[in-house]
Length: 248
Image (tube, rainbow, N blue to C red):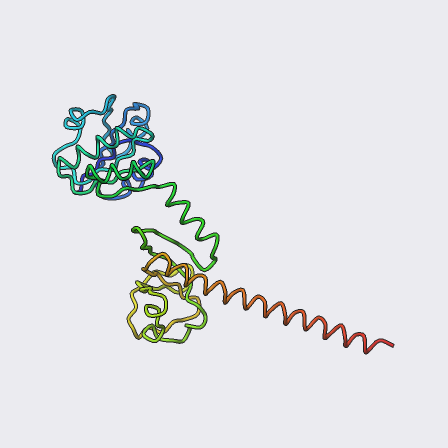
């Protein structure tokens, strides 16, 4: 069973803890606030109070067998840098640290953090992308310019095989899996898969490729709305004219 330590229970640390408590892992939580630690005394997590964060207190608190560490010391930038540096010297394979600023992130990477996160920024990016495009159902950044995105399959691809869709050539997107409708499960699909109405794809690719794909979908939708409005306007005028002609 994996052993994971969460050093600091800020908003990000608590969110990670809540997720880990649902999994089959051993969780060690370390925080200077006794009340925060006591809040999880009835959970499966083991809590340790660290009043002062030093190399010595970390050495005593973190067992040799720890597999990964998540660092969220809030605004205490020096504390997170010290913790990341110590964990790297202990050769802990996975060190995930929350950064407050770009310079903070650079220092964390320099001292040995294997992944630096900006939770608020990443959450804001996901939300704004979904606000802008109704075709984008989910959006997960996984690198500097790479994302996994859940998007609707455009109507012009319905009835076509994946091999004939040219998604990779036209947009630079790779289709990972697909589901039909809002409640279906994602399933793998080969080159002979034929797209159906209400299909939703899970795509992998560059951020700009996802933008271009959703822009095209939005443009198609806007075009359809314009055509619908024109037809509606034409119909209303037609019936108005007929009514005028029928009048005595």
